[in-house]
Amino acid sequence: MRLFPLNKNTVALLLVTTVVVGFFAAGMFKVLEYFIVKVLLFLGYGALTIIAFWNALKNDTKKNRPEDKLQDDLH
Picture 1 (tube, rainbow, N blue to C red):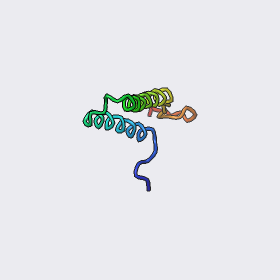
Picture 2: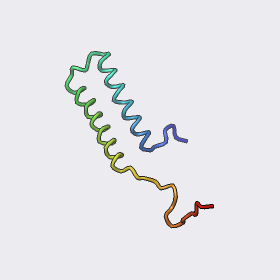
Picture 3: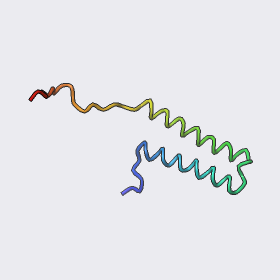
Picture 4: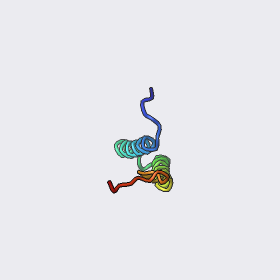
């Protein structure tokens, strides 16, 4: 049994949590001024943006009724 089922929602939530906790911790410990910390956090933000656009473009619409079985709604 897995703790987190691996799907697109879980990946996005874990990445958002990592970026938010990273910014919060860097601000609390006054290390946000360091260049490498800024690079790591903004790379995480960039990865989050890329994943969001990729999932938005890949979004498939699901039809409620298949086209091959027509249903008569007149009765």
